[in-house]
Amino acid sequence: MKGAPLNAAAMMYAKVVGFAAGIVIARVIGATQYGMINVARSVLESCSIVSPLGLDVAMQRHLGSASEHLAARLRQLRFFRLVTFGLAVIPPLLAATGLSSYVEETIYRYPDFADVLLATLIALPFATDIAVLGGAYRGVLNPAPFMLANFVVQPTVRFIIMGLLFVLGYRLWAVVVATSASYVISWAVLAILARRDMTGSDDRLDWTEIRSVLLYAPYLGASLVFVVWIRSADSLFLGYFGSARDVGQYAAILMIAQLIGLVGEALGQTLGPRVALRYRNNDFPGMEHLLAENIRRMTLLSAPIFAAILFWGDRIDLVLGPTFEVDARVVALVSARIFLQTIFGYSGFALSMTGWHARETMLLGCGFLLSVILCGVLVPMFGQLGAALASFATMSTINVVRYAVVLRMFRIRIIGVSVAATTVLAVMTAGAVWLLLQPVDHRTLAFTVAEAAVFLVLFGGTAWRLLITDQDRDYIFALFGPFRGLVRIVR
Image 1 (spheres, rainbow, N blue to C red):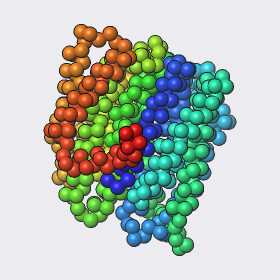
Image 2 (image 1 turned 180 degrees about the vertical axis):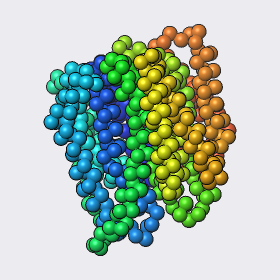
Image 3 (image 1 turned 45 degrees about the horizontal axis):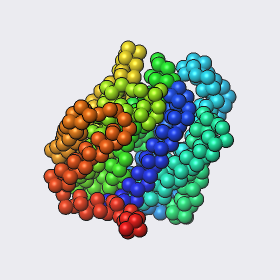
Image 4 (image 1 turned 135 degrees about the horizontal axis):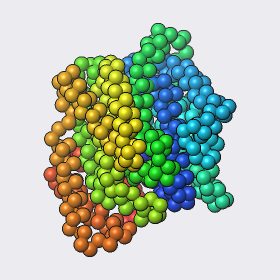
């Protein structure tokens, strides 16, 4: 759990600032342009997962599994960064020479989309290097510099630049420019920190090791590629078969649902190298405990947010405006998918960090094909509901099959009864509050906030007595340690 409080604080800050920025953007530019921006960002995200060549994950395994060779392997990091940065320059160059115009003419026929896509892809080389450095920092069990650059500097810079450009009268381009500029500036901060922290030995490069990493890195990278494509398929298919307004509304639902992983994701920042180390030491009970405890704690932190969005998430139009009226069924499916993704996503380390990366890649590849098939069938028929249903079905299938594979291979159970108990308690408590207050509910923002607050207090009190262990309480106090000074100041 080392560094988890700082990780949680940084990720919480990024989520809160990103959420606030999303609300501002949606209200200023409306659902149609909001959808176009999110299609361009989905393209950037898809490319930024391919361009590191899997080295963002491979560095966690490479650096975390052999601390005695750390200095020599850090020297190899420079070579890996140079290769990936150079390759990441290619897509924006292709976009500048006509590819973005072709995409606008044949796939996403939105006005000015070619220019928006080009300006967005300028961030790709910098996003790529951030990813590789992030993997290296996790590999040495010191994610703090990466967390600072990626989850504090980047959203802050984006929000400030966007706000200034909004004041100057820009709308769509304020968001586009701020997004690309935030990547460049956060990359510069992380690169400066890496020159201090990632100094390797002066030994000659071990090309045998480098070839070894480059052989298994693509499998790890393919796993990430499939994960991101699975997550993005619903929005990309919806953008092709539907309108930009449909994508904008769907993106707003995704923005709200991302709050489910507000704190829980911080628990997994160094999980990969720790799993790799336990596997190397043949410590299967330790690996089981590590993964099971991670999932249990993620559920405790994520289930109440999931339940709140499940029952009140369709009211985002009260915050974003009337163009964001959404279907409650779509909100339910999207939030359930994000919840599954948050809780079970890191269980993939049981395969990718233990030498069984090919099986993880094959599993996710099949999941991606399933996603494409389901989106191709359901999105033209049902629009947003079809996209949400396809994404949920794909994610559910992947996690069930992965759990069965891990159980059969390692004889470890990483999902306990407490995960189901916590989820049921959260959903039942939220449902009871929702039902009891329906007769007096006038669907206002103030009343919605009050309903959600009542639910969170009831769930928190019950979970504190029934589900949270003494060790969890100690961890929670440590998690919010950075905020104790603020409490004393207020008092």
